[in-house]
Length: 176
Figure 1 (cartoon, rainbow, N blue to C red):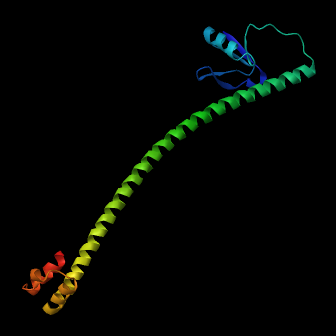
Figure 2: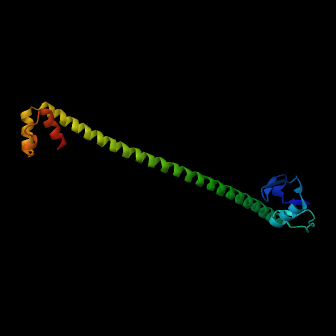
Figure 3: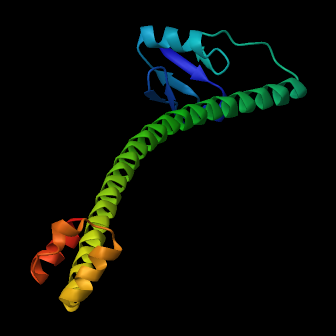
């Protein structure tokens, strides 16, 4: 089937129905399959016509100018609709990428929080061990009399600590 188009599409390649591309020659004509031609004439009646179209009677210059303007605007609308659809598809792709990145970021944040908590727990454990060691060093530098005085000031039961040696007193105080 032979189809024709308006002057803005003469000599142009156009993507139509289901992403098929057709190319109009310099006269605005193109040969296509009969089924496809019928679909295109029905779907795009503003700018695709059957090659069997009767010659219309002469138009005035103003009518021709108006028709050219209408055809040009229809062509622009068609192009803008195509661009809009491409942008929508691109947006869907970007949104899918965004969701994937958000999931990855959430996973990394969860790992960072877990590691931070482990670090804090380890730091607290080390701080407690450091304090215990410092206390032990202080107690080791004290005399047996000082250690007994400390037990007495702390009001520990005298019978538990009075006969202990310096090493045993240090151990006793640390366990209290």
